[in-house]
Image (cartoon, rainbow, N blue to C red; front, side, top):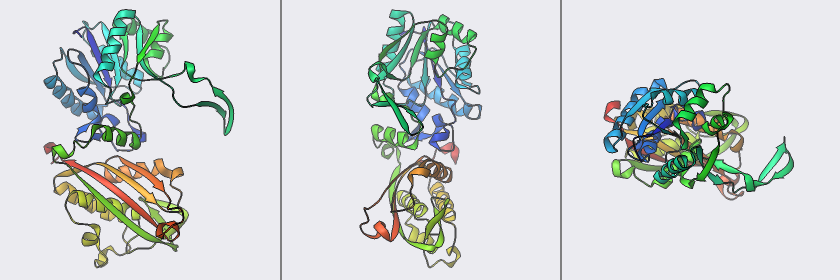
Length: 389
């Protein structure tokens, strides 16, 4: 590749569905941010513009500077994004050097996109003179529905799933953006609406988009346990509480009206207790019993959010920050599925990191089959950056 190729990395999304309390691109993925992983896979020799939220512009500039140190880039800058993705890409286009002839637009939320996908797209733009998008065939059966009713099966032979980076000739893309009168779902749609052809090249399964906590967990599994190589640590916590119909149910920091509560010295929130145990274990700080045990009368009836806040303070004092928490709830009720996203958001707010929630039953066997609820949590900690001290 030559200096006539530039890449715009869109990192201005809020990441609401990820529920991590920060813009998605700046959420930790093991020892780096999602943005850092995305930049690490962009080939050298390309001009780089990262479009970030104004609130995280300085952090984006640090990531860009690191990328430029590791891989040779003719230019590398970070600029503030706009209120929509389209406006953000326009801001990136305006920041690219005039020498750029081929533009790639890439989502930071696809941080594991292999370098060869970038190369395929650039080669195809140069050979076709049009827009190019990486795609994957649709594997699932697709149905057209109206409400709960299935209307028809859609022929998937002509369907593809679209990824990034998407590539375009610079002059044609500039003109398409200057003429755009409406918002489009991606840059290829805007380019096609201006009358330009768009072709496809093979994408890659690793170029999936991180949208939910489960996606983040999948990315961490694919990367492997690199947190351990940077001084990070992992821990496991488990807690069970018996059902007590006389008590209101407080679980994961949420109220569950109409459900039997859980007995306990505090509010019986088995989910938060398991997370507290996992965090304490990962940081080498003992366990919940030795820290907030029943011999501590000041914690009788206390909200478990108090335990979690104190645990996070101790984790911070030990030099760590939370990178990720995975949680499994085992019990006949409540039904977690309808509120899973809400629960993940709430736990993410409390922990300050992505939390992935799964739930199952024990098929009416044993304690968690009928008499109570159990929660198993795993926590990954990473060293707190010196600047956060």
